[in-house]
Amino acid sequence: MYEYRAPLRDIRFVLEELLDCDSHYQSLPGGSQVNRELRDAIFNEAAKFSEQILAPLRRSGDEEGCSWSESGVSTPSGFIDAYRQYVDGGWPGLSMPEELGGQGLPLSVDLVCGEFTGQANQAWAMYPGLSSGCRMTISAHGTEQQRQTYLPNMVSGNWTGTMCLTEPQCGSDLSFLKTRAAPNDDGSYAITGTKIFISAGEHDMAENIVHLVLARVPGAPEGTRGISLFIVPKFLPTADGHCGERNAVHCGSVEHKMGIHANATCVMNFDAAKGFLLGELNRGLNAMFTFMNTARIGTASQGMNHAEVALQGALNYAKEREAGRSLSGVKAPDRPADPLIVHPDVRRMLLTIRAFAEGGRAFAHYLAQLSDHEWQSHGDTQKNAKDLLAFLTPIAKGFMTETGLEAANLGMQVYGGHGFIREWGMEQNLRDARISTLYEGTTGIQSLDLLGRKTLADGGASLQNFIAIIEADLQDMDEQFSQPLTARLREWQSLASVIGSRVQSDLDELGAVAVDYLMYSGYVVMAWFWGRMGTLALARQQDEAFYAMKLATAQFYFGKLLPRTLTHKACIESGVSAIMSIDDEQFALF
Image (tube, rainbow, N blue to C red; front, side):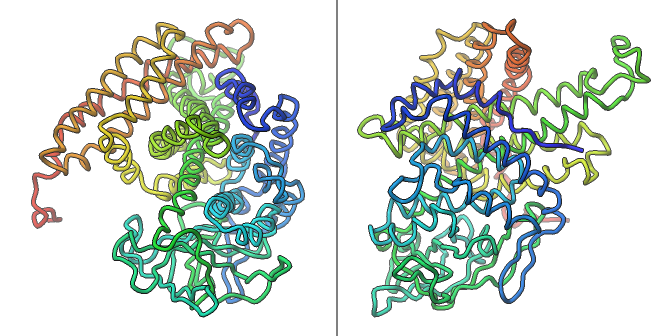
């Protein structure tokens, strides 16, 4: 049976050798405290909590699921106690300001701990994970009174938070949003409407739940320009910071889902519930994007997490399971058959999984360092980080979740028939991974954002700026990596120009090639990380097996995975005609 182990060795490599986290933290206000000793203490404790407390609840939570009743939603056995231990350990406030009861550490430290909890038990990790985005949104857009009312209890973990966007008639297109916000005499609003697919919308792990709800006030403009954001707590706070009167917000049901059974995905009904405007009137999406961008980076990390879970399970199984003999000769004469790992196709799958897990880890923690600068730096450093995050976030969310799903599928495949059986954990990993390509904007939505808003809208300036960052690394990169990466960078620029030219005459070209463009972009970005990691490993491959494995994976990535860009390039160049040549009326089943 699969047992989770936090990947501490690879975390140290990524943070210390690849991303030079010591210099990074020195550049942040107050970041000098985040030295090696402190990091190790935090990460070791997070690993221990994830391995010993959360991982054992992964399968049982999936099998038990959440249960709904008129009084609320009950989480699986052990979840409440695990959350209490999480709160007692001070984990919710790790990166929140000290004046609010937090520990004032950079967001990037929080992401490492979130990686461990997400890998150990994704469904459980989503409860505190949603709270993080809610806290950050109130911190960024709330009044001082709102911050003092809600954040101390959210920082302590006594209260959790959600994001309420989707409605039965509107998903990604929020212009159809119908939830209403009628002004009350006391300056609050009466929120009325139904929201669906609300992760952690109702549960029994915390004493209060703070919902951030998109709604329209009377007379607001049509479309997305007329949407405002409101704080709607389950229990209205009292003056002394405790839970007061029950608000008119209730969970109507929980969804029956393919995966993440232990996380309550709720239908939430707001029946003239008291809400409080957060940010400016009719500027709700602007405020909500603080939450959504945080959530998208978190979801990208989920893709990496599912790849890591697949890697740990499949690698251990492939070393132990005996099946057949190597085509090139017996490798284990003292055993009745050779272990699976000697077979080239099994190695292909294992190396693919590893490439996506470890390449995704580098990508995720690079984004985390940019987030540190967005939230803590000032001037040009802050602006450059914010701009770069805006460009890279849709690539990360789309590419890492798609490759994470592929890795989860391959992890199951390595097991053969046993992978289809629940006890090994791989079928749950695959089921849990499937949602990551859907929520926080599907791959298609991320692709349109990347190509339309982040590449073509500014004439390719964002793309060129990022390519310049990669080019600055090429001279220090080993030739086996720098040469193919240089060719892909030129091709990346050329493809953007071709698409931009075609879109001028037919906007359907944008939708026809956007996903291929995002996936092409993802393979190039990951090649940058693997080229750097492979170069580092090349210099130290004799020191320990870790570096030899890292170099081999880098070479595999460039030899077997980066060439996938050729297919995406061909699909981009073929354009829209093969997709849109049939009229809507003819597009039917016969």
